[in-house]
Image (cartoon, rainbow, N blue to C red):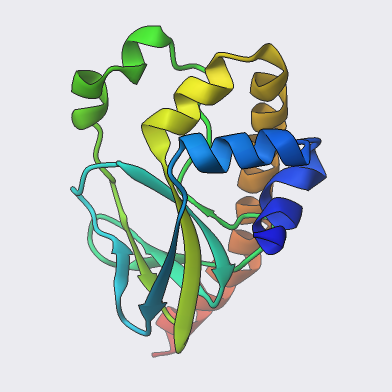
Amino acid sequence: QEKVFEGAFMTFGFTPRQYLDIMDQAQAQFCHYTKGCFIYKRGESMKQIHWLMEGEGEILSKTDDAMFKVRPGKGGWLGEFFDPNADATSHTEEAWGKRSHCGSCRCTSDRCRTVALDMRKVQEIVHANPRLTSLATKAEVSDLWGKLHRVLPEHRRMTYEAMVA
């Protein structure tokens, strides 16, 4: 749990107590995947948000083309950790049941380990506390920047490989 706290929460100002409360209330589960296994597939319900602790994954588009790689650390959330624009009506079971993944995520290393949190619960916990809302917004922005910085060089390489193949 220290790895998750340090990599996904502490950097953004979450206290150990806030982290433990989120892990407890959002029913944290530690998951293991092997190479080729899907962490989630396009069209599946967005019940959980995963943070990659170990290994490497790839995000796949609607056409199952690899869009980019995901590694532990900055950019390690496999989806949106927090939606600052959500309102109270989006936290209901009914509203949440309508949300689904628009892409897929697959483990590409021999072993991937994630921590999975109930995504709806995370939103409820964070939105209920203005301090947590601020910290979660920082975490989400940092995660998105981490993905952008990783994607550009990777996209250039993939484009080049496609041209010479």
